[in-house]
Length: 91
Image 1 (cartoon, one colour):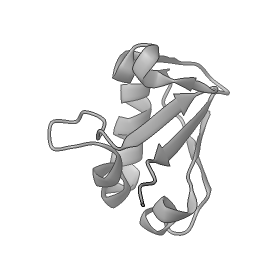
Image 2 (cartoon, helix red, strand yellow):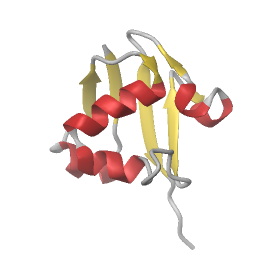
Image 3 (cartoon, one colour):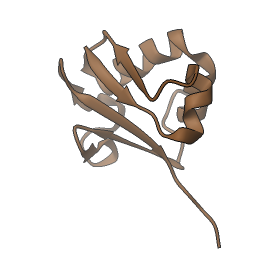
Image 4 (spheres, one colour):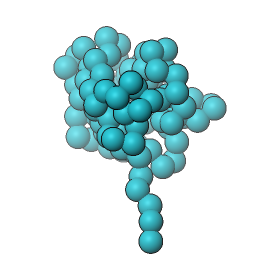
C-alpha cells in the first residue's frame, strides 16, 4: 500500500480525508491512475487534460520532488508516502 497525503485545500475532493491508501505501486503514474479512478475530482486538481502534473502542484515521493526523480515515471514502492502540495501564491 501507498499512502497519499493531502493538504487541507484538496481534502474536500477526497471526502475530507487527509490520507488515502492506494494499492497501486510501481510508478507515480500508476498511483495517480488509481487515485483518479477513486476520486476523479481530486485527480483533475492534480493532473491536466493530458494526464500530466499541473504546473502549480508539487508531488513528493518519500520526500523527493518527483519533478527531479522521473516525473510520473518516478518509482513508488510498497509503503511509500506520496505528498501532494498545491503551490501557494499571494502578495
